[in-house]
Length: 418
Image (tube, rainbow, N blue to C red; front, side):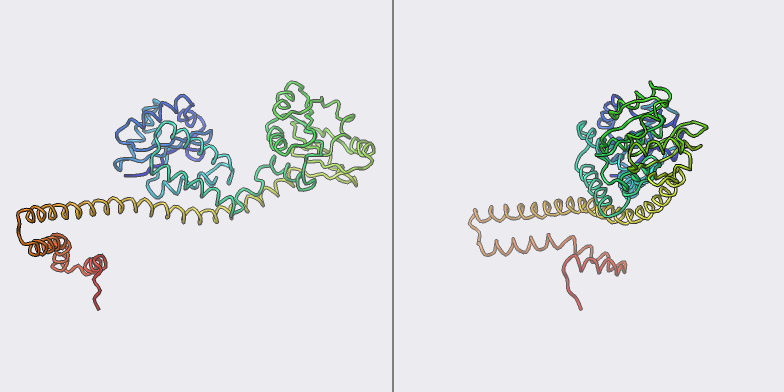
């Protein structure tokens, strides 16, 4: 049996090709059914996300080309084009890859946790389609345990590595919990959308979105239960905000020092945090000169992100040590399955010999033959039959001068020689 991880991801292929290889929910069911019915595939799990499509499969024979052919055929793609953009790992390398992916070490954002949930979902889908048996059940449970250990024992997910996430983390660092803060988001683009999602998870008292296009702001606001105002309303609403995070495409500053001074007077100088992640800047740099206003620019956040990326890379090295150890443990467990089968076969052979000789002895006893002679004959025959195979092995090794094999045979047979 061979374990194979065959896949395509953001490092190896374009978005266009990844889209062609991705599995929709309907396709996933059909694909798992086909793999289950295929005589070459024992077990299979399909992971399909926006950044990767991977098939983890145990093959009856060591021929990963069969899996590539199936994937190309399923999606109606050229096999050579797929082959040029795909990666394939086997056995221990495949197991190591699965664990790395689950821990976020192979993600676009190093250490991101979402992939683990996606792999768990893929495993559950495969189980529901009966394409997971003993080996993969143990493999994926082991993988989930490794991911948990990596999260617990390393700092792989502790630091912000996106500007949006860093902005929210900065606010949390200054205010602690955000549940009593009012947050004003200026803009409604992709960056502010990410900020809003991170904020929403921290349950601030109120989120308000200010944007030139009200309809665009409403689309964002409905996902995070936020209020919406027009940019023209900023001067009259600014004093209500404890935290202001801005990211627009404006070529001129939207918030000036004078507007902030007025807002601080209305707040009786209760501090305000301004995070400007726009380029060019949305907030005049002079705002940072005010005593109760704390202004951070995109450069400040980028410095935090760079430092955190370095921290995650160090954590990734620590994670790999854990993965390597746990991967080796799983491989040892798989090898033990072979020994279990060997022991079972050996015991059955010995039992068959015993049964054969005991049946003959009982038959002789029933004819009235001397019991002592029959018992002695039984013991001699049983001894000779059990000694035959190891004796031949010792003789063959001795004739060929295979000292290492002789030493191993002595160890196996429990022969203690000085």
